[in-house]
View (spheres, helix red, strand yellow):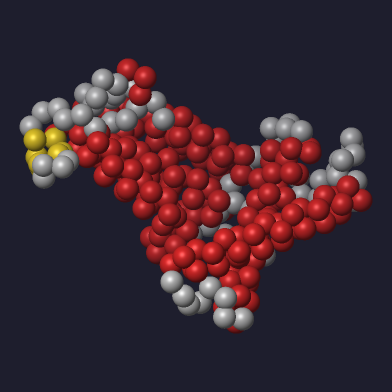
Length: 267
């Protein structure tokens, strides 16, 4: 609920754009980045993506708060790739247990940058898009089935609720002295117990939501919309921006000679 209210008060450029246009732009960028594992195209796309964050009313601090698991996962994936990939070129580091060569370093760097370049557009999309508006656009403009769209919307809404519920259950258990102390084994058991409590709560919420949606006629054939989804000139610029970032990334990699198709990669 707090996120929805924050979005309503955010009048940044990208927040005003149609969610379907933003989603399509993200798909274009992600598709191109998934084709190659070179570091040049990922770097170019990442640089443009960082420039877009002010247009969504976001800062680097908010980026870290909302995307730190993805950032850490990309860094860890790049490091693992660098030390596990076959050595090609000059050896840069050799500890006797693992080594990093020029080729493996480029491969690891490309993997890390690509992970960030693919993850950040999704963070950007969810940070400046209200789930209800996205569901309206998918149903009205993309003509997706109503039940699929409404089920997706319910899932997106429940993700935030489950995060808050996890914190609530954790505080309640700590107030009873459960999970706040003990050896690692006891802490693991406490975490598993808390996870089971969250699972039970999620099933209860899903059951109540299903009954409520059915009672309100969400499964009916005819639907009306309280907020019609419309396109504007801004949405055309958003689509052109996504296409431009994708084209710039590919062009830079081809110009630098680093374009390396995933299914043709020899490294």
